[in-house]
Image 1 (cartoon, rainbow, N blue to C red):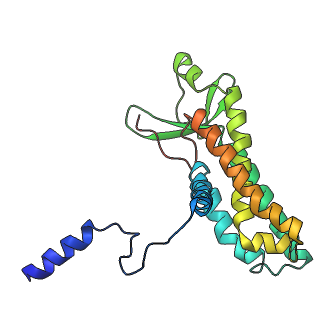
Image 2 (cartoon, rainbow, N blue to C red; image 1 turned 60 degrees about the vertical axis):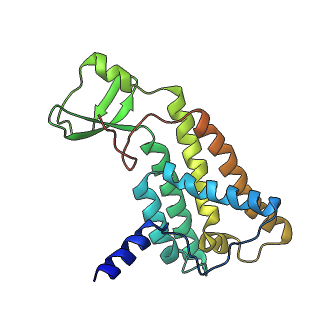
Length: 206
């Protein structure tokens, strides 16, 4: 029994994503750069509202019929991508705070402060001013839409729906475009990180 417990403890120390039975992949510098770029782009999904990303990932295979689109499926997929893009844009203007009891309240940023969605409380003017809408919020919203576009382009069901038989030039664009968007948006969010904790984003500790 003791041996088994010690074995379990040893397994807990191993990284979850490491498989010692599989040899390490040998990559040259170009392959390493490409791999890191794709990983960075995939991590950008964390900058999007969680509910929007989950909804898109769940509905995409259904709406696209696993990439085999007819005219109806293509229209439905277009609406799905558009609605999710609009959702990413609007939710960038939401924020949250905790009241005196620790309850989380959500609201939309306005020029005068924060408009509480459920109207359960009001913020004092001096505190509400800290949540007022700023130009950087519009930049974050636009970048979020671009990030979602990159996520959508990485979805093979969506790509196969709109581009069932792309030529070589189109295929190169479909491969390079989301990577370019990922690099650009990574640099932007690194230099100008968002300070809001809106709907679908990590909650604030205060």
